[in-house]
Amino acid sequence: MGIIAESIGASIHRTELSISVFLFGFALGQLCFGPLSDRMGRKPVLLGGLVVFMLASLAITMADSLPTLLAWRFIQALGAEPAWSIRRQ
Image (cartoon, rainbow, N blue to C red; front, side, top):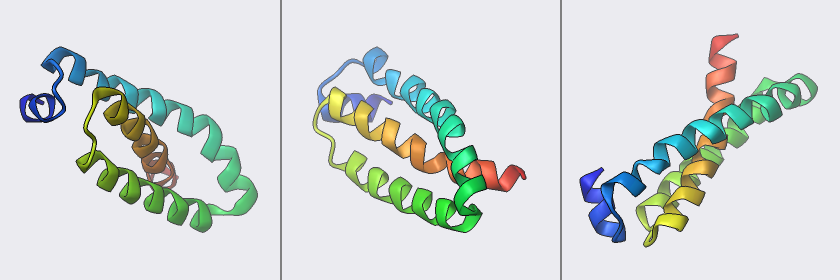
């Protein structure tokens, strides 16, 4: 966390918000992608989630401010959720 905080010019405590934002996005994704995978099937939702997760992960490496980091972490969590849901079923 220290290296991330230093690279975006924020305090460690504010950078730790990215964990909470990720968990919030992950929880919201469960509400959205569960019914979507029932309707469209698991495979398209899983592949879409993986693409979103990878692109958000790449964007996080280029984040230059805390709001940008938090936004991309939220999107990353949305992309991670379909893989977790499908794995549990």
